[in-house]
Structure formats: C-alpha cells, structure tokens
Image 1 (cartoon, each protein chain N blue to C red):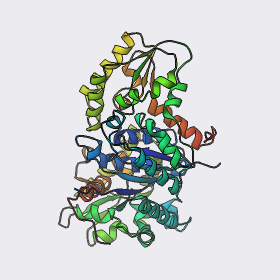
Image 2 (image 1 turned 180 degrees about the vertical axis):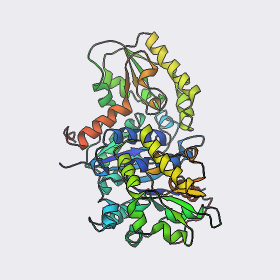
Image 3 (image 1 turned 60 degrees about the vertical axis):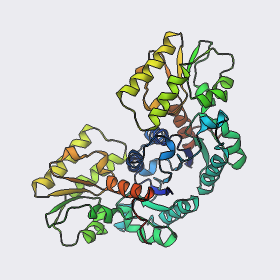
Image 4 (image 1 turned 90 degrees about the horizontal axis):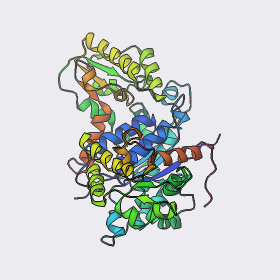
Length: 230
Length: 230
C-alpha cells in the first residue's frame, strides 16, 4: 500500500504543531517505525502575527506561508495541513503557490459536528473570528463565544510555554461558561486550546480541531480516504 | 540577533524526533511565538532499519539520509542534527551531501561526561555498539553494557508506541544493573531510552543524549555558541 507523506505548515504556535504531530503519530504506531507516516514539517514561529495581520495592524504572513508550502511540496509532501485555525485566513495564498491539496481544518471540524441546530460554543482566536472562518462554515447555527479578551490573554499565555494548572483552570472556566449559556457542543477552534483543555474538562462534547485534523490527515495518508480534489 | 534555523533528520523513531523537538522548544519559549527557533523537520520513519544495515542484514539508509539532509538544506536549514544515535554511523554519507554543518550527537554527549576514569554505563542500540560510535568517543573509559537482547527488545517495544509503566520499569531495571556493576554515570545513548527513563529513575547521573543535543542546537541557534566548523 502506498503511504502518503503529509506536510505540516507549522509554528503558529510551535507547541501546537508538536501537539498535531503527536496526535498523528498516536494514530500511526504499528509494529515498527516503518508502519508510521512520513511527516515533513516547517515549524516556523517567526511568521508575522496572524491576529494582528487580520486586524490590519501588521504585515500579512501570507507570502511566507506560501513559501513554506512550496518548500514542503518540493521536499516531497503529497498533501499539506496547517497546524493553526487562524492561518486558514491565508489559505488562498497557500493554494495559489502549490500543486498538491491543502486540507481545510475548519471544514473538517465543522463536518464533525453532529447534525441539528443546537447552539455551538466556539473558542477561536480574534483573527479567526474576524476572518469569519468558522461563522461561514457553520451557516445558520447559533454561535456562542467566550469573552474575547479573556481568551486572547490565555492563548498568548499558552504561547509562552505555560500549560500549567492555573491556565487549564482558566480555559475550563471559559468552556463551562459556554456550556452554561446553552452550547450543546464546544469547538476548540484554536490549536492552543487543546494544549490545556481536554474532553474531560467540559460537560458537553468537545470538538478538538487538532485531533480532527490529525485523524483526517492519517486517514488520507494510509489510503482510507481519498485525497481531496484540488 | 540573527536566529539560525535547525534542520532535524528524524523518524528513527518518530516519537524520539518529537521528543527532541519538545526539548528544543522548552529551551526556546519566550514572550511570543516569534522568540522561538524555526525547525525544519523530516520525520521519516520509512528508512531502512539502521541496526539491520549495520549488521549487514539489510540495505543502508545512507543514501536516503543524504537525500533528506539535502532537502533540509534546500528548505533553509542553517545546520542539521540527527534525532538518532545509531544513524550517526551514516554521518559521512550525510556530510558528503550537504554544505552546512551537521552536529555530532555522540561527541556532544561524551563531551558532557565529567572528566575522570570512572566506568560509564552505555545504553545504546546494537547498531550503535557494532559501529563503535560511543566506544571511539569514550577512548580508554571502561564501558559497562546492559544485556543486548533485553535492551533491543525494549527499544523495539518503545517504537510500537508503548511507553507505559511496565516498559519504564524494565528500562529502569537495566539502568540499575549498570549502576550496581559500578557505572558512575549512565549514557542514554539511544533516543528511545529517554522516552521512558528520566534522571529520577536511576541512582547515578544520567547523560541524556536527546537533552544534550537539544541544548547544543539551541545554543547554536540563538548565537550563544558558534556554528561548528565543517
């Protein structure tokens, strides 16, 4: 069986990329190294801040993201993923630069949401919200959001390497607030969120965008699912 | 300050590569993503088995390792590391293919050993031992080895993704045996070993080759240490 190579556009932040690699690897282990999937990774934390760019307060990371994607394709990646929800705002820049498919983490995550019209809690970064990525994918669903400032402070705290008990408690409190307001599901729609929030930390089902992307990527790599059409 | 990009030749095994990245990242966290170091990673578990190759029982991974190194250089790496001690047996193949420096994990680890002539315990894979990598670097030191079959069984068990309590206990028992025989220090000279053995698990100081390589690479990336001469 042909095993496909996944390319990871990463570094946003770097810990979230390691988390995605870890989730993929846990879906890969077999009898030996050779049963696993090859991952080509550009874990580049030096990119311009995505949230500032989308707010019009800083340069776009689009050109550098496109360059990273080109490099991963040249190195042998069969398809690409981005280990960051917000960076999907620049997916058009990336797709224009490559001739291999790029998975869509937002679409994969929303596709994993059970059918129905129940309100959904969305824990996503300011840039992701401002770009409307999940809102467009969720259509008519009622979306409940946590306090934007509180979540952004937490996300940037996590980016300093802090995933300790206090940070976990603050994230769980934000998630609980959404469940209390009536969210039937909560989307961890920023790859920093699942670094400190697990399914056991919240009373309603958690849709973990990192876990969902990892599953999709490994299904494609092992040939259990077709490569998406370009 | 110029920040250098590290290229990681990985996948031997893939979990050990993630561990090396994690150690590097923990030495990198700052106030934001942008304080961290860019890592270009080829986490390629599909390479031919290194131990079999060195034993003359399988094809050499040398040509593929050289190709991976070339790809990392082309993608922008300023220097390279290999997330595997045994694969250093093929360092000449890699160096012949690139025009950037390749750090030497074996030399870095032995340089971290306190001066003196006390016996050292060496936990390394069969191929690493057969290639004489640590023996040459250690010179006249007395080297104590665990049972080869017992360690190899453990290393291949770890490569299936098992890092549970039973595996940890078996590794700690092997390390204890070396300390009991008189080892004043123990070298974790295979990157699978520190996945299940920490400094607190053994009564004598542990030289963790993954941690030592991560420190060396980050010292170089942040300009605290010069790039090695080619």
